[in-house]
Image 1 (tube, helix red, strand yellow):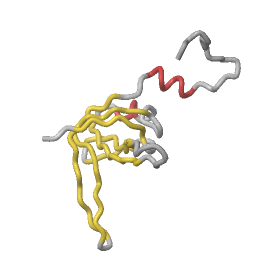
Image 2 (image 1 turned 90 degrees about the vertical axis):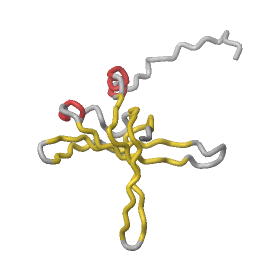
Image 3 (image 1 turned 180 degrees about the vertical axis):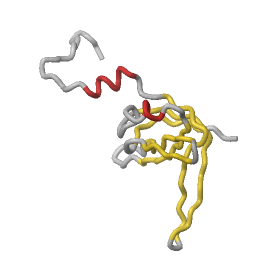
Length: 125
């Protein structure tokens, strides 16, 4: 068994999928990898298919840009289409840490011009 842990942002809003009587949440986590100064970051896309009972409560939370941490088993699926080989990388049997409620609420707040940061000019570094 292999284990992967990824912290990243959702590439798009999650989707609810139904297989038989079971409901799943499907989403894609983006993980940027720094390539060095002056080079463009590389982005990994990992598909997550999460079986949960309370899908209705998760849909408003798992939206595009939401930061999550996912732990689970790495799965690589090989597909062939039009003579080309593609690999889909995903995470099975995930444990998902959702964004905190305070960060979700702060994303909804509108920026205010009368909020000024409290800066201390006496800090020597």
